[in-house]
Length: 455
Image (cartoon, rainbow, N blue to C red; front, side):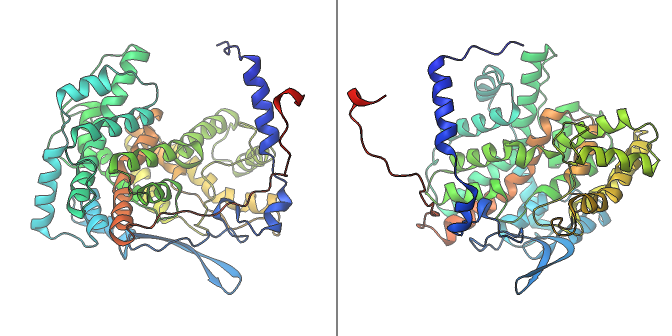
């Protein structure tokens, strides 16, 4: 595909932008600027407090940081307990996790029943809205279509600018319920217009869980297995929140602090998550694994796999980035608890789909990569790393039959629960205080020159 011709003025301005944007690295140290809001020891800069979720991957004693087993906590409850409780009682737990994140407590039987019934009544989109906003309004990226549709829902809300707690909760539940429908319809529309596939629009079933509804709308009744629904529900639970510091959640807190409406704030979070450095890692893992499978002849040979991973780190294999995708995390060190939980069911799914050999290759890389990374970087540079949830989530979605354009939207379908919970906290606790960090200007002073004298 030929690139469009770029006007000379654009090229000229682009060159000027690059020059004007250059900041000498030593200036960050001079002014004690913590780039990316990260401390020198890789921990995050503390910028706020939250009651919603917590991510634990290390402990600090004085200036020292010590790696520990990872923990993900929702409203004071270890996510491992939430997952185990749902599995033991044989029901899908994402909907009760939504309730927990929003309210701070687990629902009793009656509360959960009423909550799920109410959510079920909200899943449908108005026919004329579906036609005008999704089916007739083309889009080549589901995340962009999702953001556009969320902004469109603003126009259907008679109380769109009302930031009272009751209305914020009402708006949150409406978006949480409708996200699976919007994402499924957006994907089908995109395939229809750009891939000439049959357009299939299936109505959600109010009696089904969020995971089952999504698979129903994507694949049709009877076209998905119980294990597929169970593991998708698990993935939704594990992605529902990740503390206030992840980029998209911080984004919604920043935009919410201005007092903007719910739809604009959620659209900003979607835009943040769309960035490949935040929401697209599982796709990179799949591409890397395809490359490994093509170039490593014996998937069960540790030496052969090790040698190829070293080639990847040396930028001589895969995409030349020098990254082993899915290995490492900003917070988790020894282990990512989400990876451990997802991996258990991923093995069962691999058996069901006849892909156990491929899954065992993933397992081998998960075991080998941290030490290879440590040896490659050297003990003065390397930090403790582990496989993060993205390492297995793309494989899981692929086994279910969910295509790559839906991977980040699935992330959003889950994280909307956390986003709304943090927005509610931001507006009800700290209403009236805008988040406004400082930036030091380091551009050199220059004198004004009259137009006729400029070169």
